[in-house]
Image (cartoon, rainbow, N blue to C red; front, side):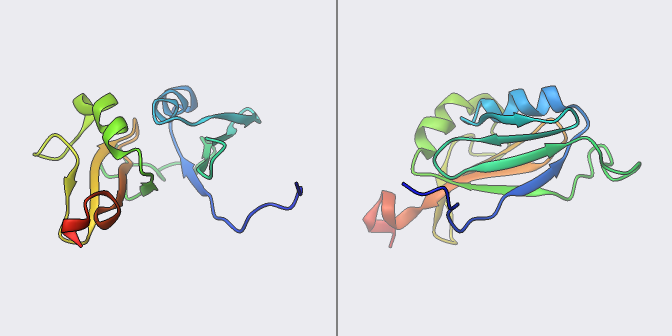
Length: 129
C-alpha cells in the first residue's frame, strides 16, 4: 500500500449551512474526513470526495439561483434512488435511462445545487447500448 493519492479531482462547494449540507451529503454515503470549522472535507472511502465551505463571499450563493452542479457516478443508482425517492426533482420520480446514455436521477441539496447520480446505461442494461 502507498500513501500516494490516486489521480483524482474534488469539488469545493460553497454552502450557507455546513451542518445542513453535511447531513444531506451523508444521506448519499459521504462522511466527514476532516473538519476545519468553516471548511469540511467529506468522502466515501471509495473515490467520492467533496469539500464544503461557508467562506464564500457575500452574494456568491443567491437563493434559488445556484449555478453549481455535481455528478456522482456510482453503480448504486437504484439503491440511492430508493433511499432518496421523495427528493427526486425530475417528473419521472425515479432513475431513468437518458438519451445521453446514463441511467440517472437528480436531486437538489440544501442550497439548490443540482446533484445528478448516475451510471452508464450500457453497464446496467446492455439492451440500451
